[in-house]
Length: 209
Image 1 (tube, helix red, strand yellow):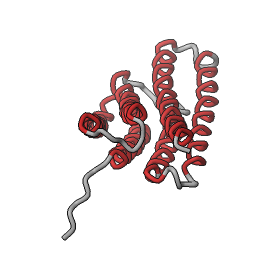
Image 2 (cartoon, rainbow, N blue to C red):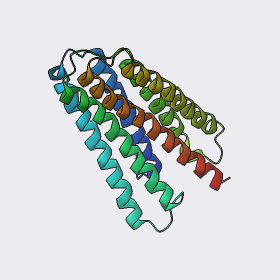
Image 3 (tube, rainbow, N blue to C red):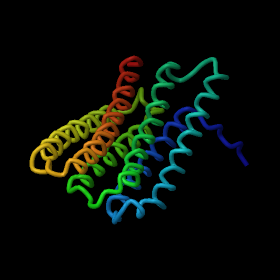
Image 4 (cartoon, one colour):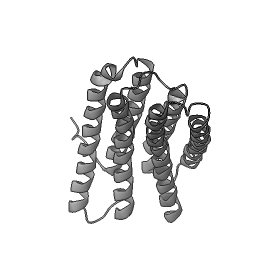
């Protein structure tokens, strides 16, 4: 029986993107099943478990870096990728926690639409990361990076639309406006972070062209 291959940086990056996809799917489940803040409790615990899992992957990356003299890509790029992937999962969990903390009486009509964009950007990152160890030969990664950027632009348009509505026709309920502004701010941060990760990957491609 062959010796089991030791996990490498790319394996750990892939595990982080997989965790991000799972966290994004959990966010959609929170929105679809939402009745009150209490209804989020069980899903919130699952979200926190995924965040802890991601922390372990980041710690494994840092541990490898402390021992490895030669790395497949520059050390600062490895650190940037694992930090931002961990941040992405943290930010998605933050959105889940907001639904629990703020005890919204109803779900905003654009919340699911935003959550779907978060999941799409995470899934596209995951596809790109699964081919990233072959980045010098891959023809698909560049288009996937472009796709993540397109989702970020779509999220920006939705964010503008939502803010305009909150400050316009929805402004009579000040507490509700403040609550949803905070939630949508965090949702936008998720997609922005996905774009930042994709841009980091694109920079690595350019440096190694």
